[in-house]
Image (tube, rainbow, N blue to C red; front, side, top):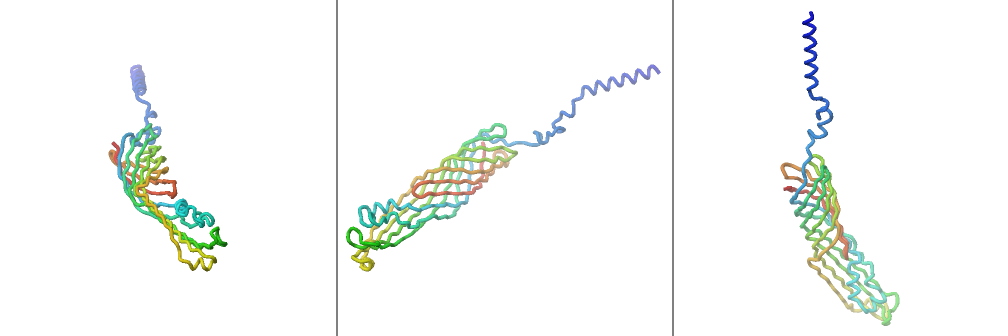
Length: 279
């Protein structure tokens, strides 16, 4: 009996020692949320240089209001109809136009990554034809005789068109890596190459009475200006998301807003899809 009690005691001591040597299973990641803390979630590594191609579709909204006023004023400088009727300031209603078109291009940049935060710089280029055009005219007869003693019947017409063929944006990007996805936002400055054509025509008839002015033979003055490869300046902003596919290959979806200011204020909105490779 004494031997049996001793054997049971020894067995309990051995089992206790073995249990003390075992790891605490509650410390295993899989038992304390490890599937969401790091075992199953693998965040793509975005740091490095990358290049890619893209295609897009968008609209160009152009405002031609007042774009030909200076040209008209120069054409009619020191004339009675400009000095007393202010033809160059007539509201010819060269208004806003909006046209849609497709484009294609490329992008390249560099990302730096700190855990899930990704910061970078990028150059984006699009080639297409974002264009607009507007035409307007107005006619007036002076209410009284002007300083030359005549009534004047004046008709003014104005046209303007612009075609943006190439557009590049230089951006700073900020994103947050989540799994294989990198949602980001960006902002920067923009340059564009545009062809601009503007023209004005003014027809003047005069006589001692309004009826004689309307019946007189008109004298016509005209001017035009063509600016090929005109450089536009502006700024850019937008959002997008990159998705890592396999290896360094990733897909992209993006929206960009570009604003150009000048004689013809222009906004270009595009949505784009692309495919790139991170080295």
